[in-house]
Length: 139
Length: 171
Image (cartoon, rainbow over all chains, first blue to last red; front, side, top):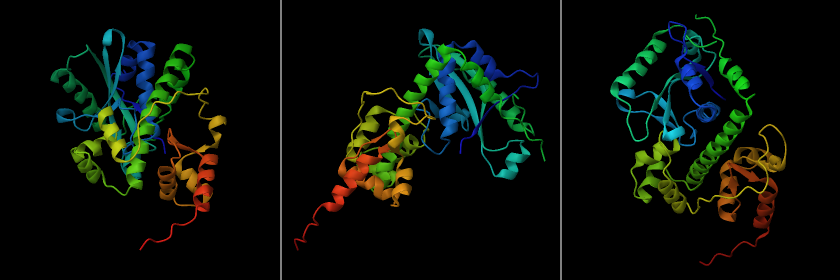
């Protein structure tokens, strides 16, 4: 069964991932969204995402990133969390079923690494998401 | 009990974006590319299962760390072509890029691929075990393309296989 795809909404009402996607070129956004749909249709533990969906490690353990590239070899990343628990717990979170939560996105130049401060900013949003009951998502 | 959230935002957003022909074209191209990679990896995992190999055993046979195989089959890492090729070689398969001869039909519409079924669908339709379907494909060279099998070709191979005389024991 396909998972839901939902977008984290910040306390100020903004939706960071959508703001990021809106700033991407049409082609980059299409590629990132295609990965999300493929993963949601064949969710973990199945192989899915064509190699553009990767589990993150270290300080970003528990997060998954969607990887895309664009003009000037720019690298685009969407950071996601998975919401999968027993039905009662999902109901407590307000979710009708397992979901792939898109937290935010970041861009970096080719052959550069994102800084820990960038990842920390992602985790701040992710922590806010996980602390919210019910979850706060774009509706 | 929390209120039930409306999770339809993504579908509504995608529906709106699909109205842009440039977006739709790129999205469909990207999905084909993703589906092809996913299909190859899943086929290899099916072959691994059919061969009765654990992921750890497969890793040992190709001189890789077991975690690399676990990650590959669970989409937790970027597939490395050399690793994919090594696995295919060990399982008696090969990775090929086959030019499409016809335009790929849309998922929801019946077309030339309507006769192509997944191993699960074929097993159910023919009333045989899924592992048997995969075994026949491997042994008789019936291609599993994008996770699907040509039903007519499979049935023909199955009939030919059943018609073959049984080898007499040499012992």
